[in-house]
Image 1 (cartoon, rainbow, N blue to C red):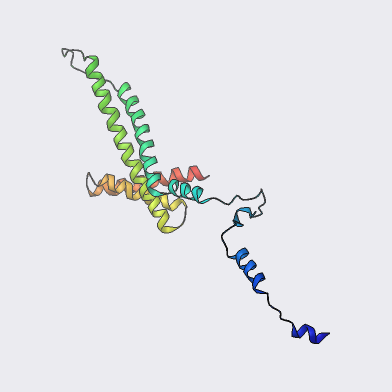
Image 2 (image 1 turned 180 degrees about the vertical axis):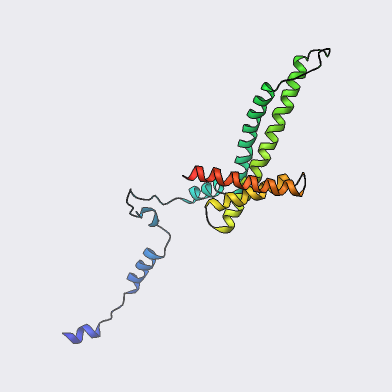
Length: 184
C-alpha cells in the first residue's frame, strides 16, 4: 500500500492548476474588497480608488494652501471691515464733512487691503509648512515653528534685514505658541 502512495503524483492536475491560477491570479473577482481588518473599535473599511484620489487631493499642499488663502481672505476682509468702521476719521474743523461715497470708498480700501494681506500670509505659511512636513515626514510642532520663521522672515525682508530677522523670530514664536495651544 505504501508503494502506491509513493508512485502517485503529489502535484495538481492541469485542470486543478488552472482553477487555482484563476482563483489567486485572475482579476475576475475582487476578493480584497471583502477583507475585514480587526481593530479594537471596529472594522476598517478599505478605501476605493476614488476615495483615495479625493483624499490625495484634499491632503495635497496646493489644496491646503488654497484653502488657507481663501480663509485668510475672508478673515482679513472681516477684520478690515471692523477696523475701518471703528477707526476715527479726524478731519480739520473747517473741512467739509465726508460723503457716504467717500466713507464707503475708504471702507472698501481698508477691507481689501486687510483681505489681501491675510490671504498672502495664509498662503505663504500653509505652503511652507506643508512643504516642510512633506520633506521631514513628520507632523510635529517644529514644522509650524520653521514655517513661521520662514514666513515672518520673508514678510519682514520687505522692510530690510533687521525687520526680517525680528519678523522671523516673532512669527516663529507665535506659531510655536499657537501650535502648543492647539495640541494640548
